Length: 40
Image (tube, rainbow, N blue to C red; front, side):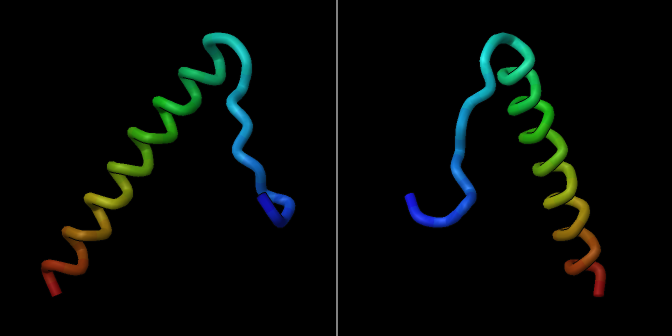
């Protein structure tokens, strides 16, 4: 993979929990953005 960005899973439960939290936050933000766009 080119570039400096490389997906590397963190070790242990902290990495798993972090990915779950990131997924939840991302989906919430996406839902809020869709609602704001739909209202206009």
